Every structure is written in structure tokens, then in C-alpha cells.
Length: 98
Image (cartoon, rainbow, N blue to C red):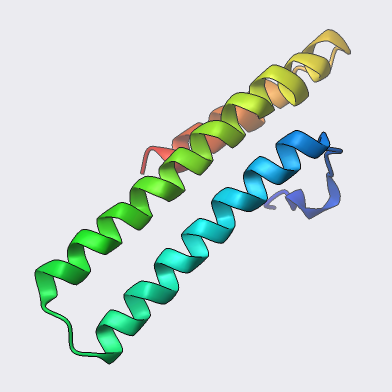
């Protein structure tokens, strides 16, 4: 049976929250821009270039979120004796490396 992660939550600082939301808003804007390019019959390689930029932005978002997760959630759980968090982290890393 697959574990459902939606039960866990994390309280983020205001600075972390704002940083993540700002990144997501920029990514959302990039995706809307790509959609407009398709709607306006933009040249394929121009769209591909913008998709690559959006992918890079998502990867950057993931790196920031993962670093914070390791520095906070993982460390706190390991200190509290919850070593299964390491297994969860490894599963997450495997998903990122697909």
C-alpha cells in the first residue's frame, strides 16, 4: 500500500513561504506564456526554449524546497528518533532522479 503524504504538514516561516510562492508565481507566468505561444502559433524551437526555462525554474524550486526539507524536517525527525524519514527522503530523491 502506498503511503499518502497529504496527512503531513509543515509550518514554514514567512520568509520561506514568500520565497516559495514568488517562485511558483513566476513559474505559473512562464507556463501561461508558453500557452499563449502555442495559441499564437509560435515557432517550435521558441516554445521549446521557454519550456526548458520553465523546467529549470521548477528544478530550482525543487532544490530550494529539498534543501529546506533536509535542514528542518529530516534533521528534526532523526533527532527525535524517527529514522523512517531517511527512507522517505530516499524515495523522494529517486523520484527526482527519474
